[in-house]
Image 1 (cartoon, rainbow, N blue to C red):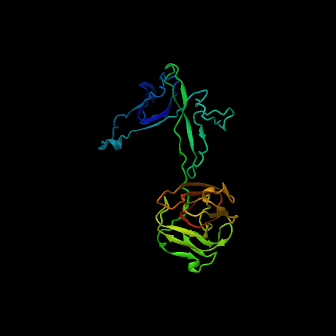
Image 2: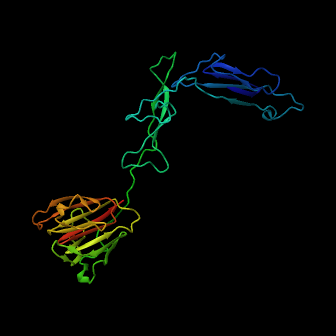
Amino acid sequence: MWVAADDSAEVRLNGTLVMSTPPTSASLSTVTTANVPGTSGASINVAPIPNTIEIKVRNGQNPSTNPPCPDQYQCNPAGVVFGASFSDALAQLPECPPPVPPHPNPNRPGGEYLAGDEEIVACPPGQVDQPGRERYRPCRCSYDPTSNPSNPRSVGYWDSWVNTCVTPVRKRACVGFDPPFLVNTEYGAPAMQPPGYPAILSSGITGYLENFLTGVSTQFNKASIESVLVPSGTGQSLRLTNISIRFDFSALNFRPSTVTFLFREQGPTINIATNASPAYVGNISKIPAAVGSAGAAVTSTPTSPPSPRGSVGTVTLSGAIQTLLIGGQELWIDEVCAVE
């Protein structure tokens, strides 16, 4: 520590005088320094007990002037400058407990984490670091209350995680066939629209009319907007009657990794294909585990009276999907959604 004053100063640490400026006849003292501990005789407390530094400053008597000075502060100014630096004498920084699961410190040969180090880890699957930041926790040190007060010891501990990972918001786009789609609107043969016609335009997704394969013949009839509710749907749905529709996702501002749609089926045969692969022709409940290059999964429940015989459910396709073809004989679909 060091101190200088006009005219003199005393510095006490935890009540013990550790340094004072020497007496001087001048109005300004010289800089005085002291090391603590050392010859000062003062003791230093260890956390959590605080240390108190007290500075007492004395100004000299008012100077004699002729004529007398009416402003004592102007004629007899006072001041003090104090500075200090603090360091410990630990031979070894305290070590934090080994992480669980094990994660050695790449910056130390032994892999240990000492006070001042940080453990940086990857985010769990499905989560990412916050933009421009890392997920880490600092190793810190504190006074060990189990140690002997006459020989205090520090211990390492882990502080809280900083900048924790977040679940990213995945982009999605859906066609729900609700307004502005109008009930009873027909596409295909009744509207004199040929295969390849872009009949559906919604949310950046285009739906092109295509032929329907029955397994023994090729059909091209109609698609229509109806008020038939597909369970979990939004109200209106698209009915496919011996026709297929190919949904193109290439204009979206993301690349879909998952595509889902809801269905109500009452016919024996559907068509489904991805990315121009050969179409599967068969019962919707028996869609294979792979449709083209995409994985496929179907959850369905049989309908019960008074509903006509059939099933309702969801089809989920996973993979890099640019187009999805869906066709049916008596098939209603809703909420065709592409997810990043």
